[in-house]
Amino acid sequence: MSPLWPGQRASLGSRLASALLRLFGWTAVLEPPPGVKFVGAAAPHTHNADFWPGLFWKWATRSPAHFVAKRELFFFPVGVFMRAVGGIPINRQRAGGNFVDAVVAVINREQEIVMIVAPEGTRSRGEYWKTGFYYMALEAGVPIAVTALDWGHKRVGIIGYVTPTGDLDADFARIRELLRDVRGHTPANETPAVPRPATGGPSRT
Image 1 (cartoon, helix red, strand yellow):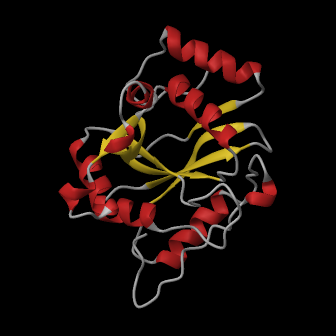
Image 2: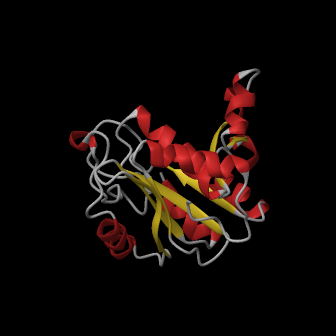
Image 3: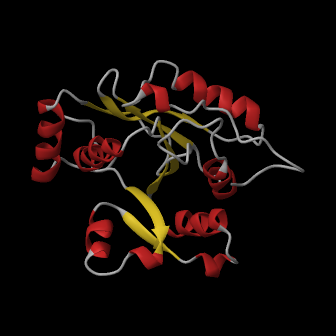
């Protein structure tokens, strides 16, 4: 049986999702959350196949995991599926066109949420992580839930929490430590957990 989000009870759906994870050799992980709102930094994201263990983790643990996408993608019938798997349409114009501010507004409005973000920004190897997720957490005043897509050990879920302090380098060092033994589906595509270099000041993207 997979761990459950605080306040949730096992359902037929969660039991089925948990059984399917176990069938394929996966373990659902959920470190006891210190609150009810988080930005989930999901890594390493190296393959489209990452979607499936992540989705079954959401169902197995009954966690309030969501992701955002521009509202234009939520057309019928695709929008029905996207909402069913946790998608939330976002209107950037309402936040002056700023993506980080728009996501912060969503986090503030929800009673509980794990806003899942893939900081690598690509399934191919990059040089650094984008820092938008960090500033979402910092500005919303919520911890970062470090969410492992660990194909090496067949475990998926939240392995620890980092409360952003504004010291980008120090906080990223803590994230790297949590992910030290985590391997992605395609290790050659893993992007180092280092922040995007700031040019002319902190980067919020």
